[in-house]
Image (cartoon, rainbow, N blue to C red; front, side, top):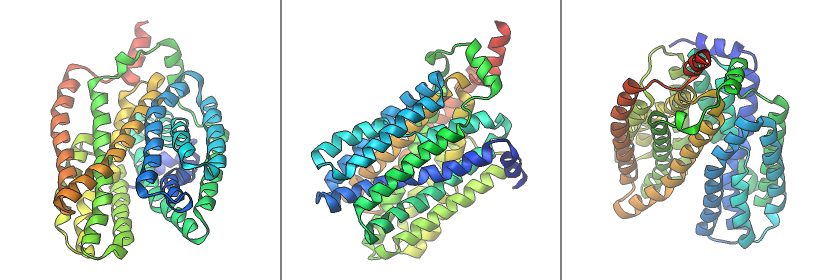
Length: 405
């Protein structure tokens, strides 16, 4: 494993500032879920079911909106999309703390639909700023940044809620979100390289030309990845509660996140890697026996193998999508990728919870790990067949098309 690939990526113009802004912009995004949940429970005096509906409304809106906003970026540019979404975020977070539940629920759906797609924008910009042969360490850095955001953002939100109030946390999330939109607007990272811009203008690309089985398979792999990750989160809590060790939840989840950081760092520096579906399948397979651990310290140990593969799997899928999608449609493709991640995460908690209620905490790991493993076994041969039959529609294909015209 070498550190030079990271140095080379960070020396590229615009990459360092993009990753820094991305890290800060993601904090309010990942903190918004727990903030909305506790606002509904504490301030509106509703149950966790009602709070879950608000979270589901935002998730559904975001899953629908991400590819639409990505298409807007492809056609009209990044800044117009940022103006629309940042203004929407400002209005939503300004009025949300005062809304009754019956109004908050549909309003949150609209807010999710027009939420700033920070994750998709950053991944699209990385593909524009970084040459294809250097994208693996770039997306590894991005995945590690995401991991850090999830470790810090919700914890800060809970601290603010418990020390001040949920409404104060909502205001803080809103101010931070708007500031993130403004920062991205001012930074205005490119969504295509100069060469890609010329190619996109010369050769219009229709959706059926790039939304091929290999790319769809990547979306399925991405959804399966977050399904397993989200279910692991819920199952850890269930196992520790069953063991009477709930107070160790933060330690276990923090260590799990640190394993992912280490894995992401190693992945970006190696020269030969596994296919994304293979990485996801191994992560899922190694998740199956985690529930056999009965104590928090055993749980910390058995999570190491699967944890090391979390960030690499996310980095690999993002990298693969950037290669399979043409520059002219990369915003929409990254939006669909973000929707796949969102859908997997949204399904994970209720699925794992149902299995845990019916069979016990250990089965939360086993069932979702088995689902991920099965998906990998189905996707891998499909990808191999498609790779033999038809090359990817990426930069090289567009260049050949331009040359032919």
